[in-house]
Length: 38
Image 1: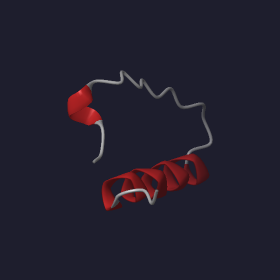
Image 2: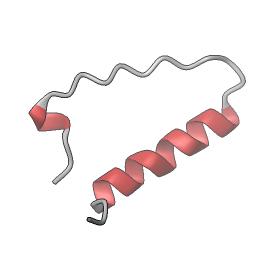
Image 3: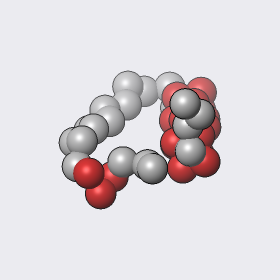
Image 4: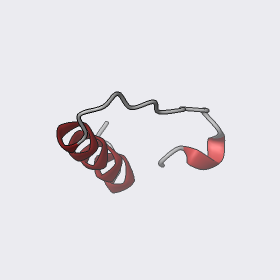
C-alpha cells in the first residue's frame, strides 16, 4: 500500500524539521482519527 500525499508531505516536513533544528523535538502523536491520512 502506497502512502497518501498527505503522509508523504508529513514525512518530508519532519525530515526537514529534524535536519534544520539542532535541539530535541517533541512530537505528540495522538492517533485521533481526524489526523490520519486516507
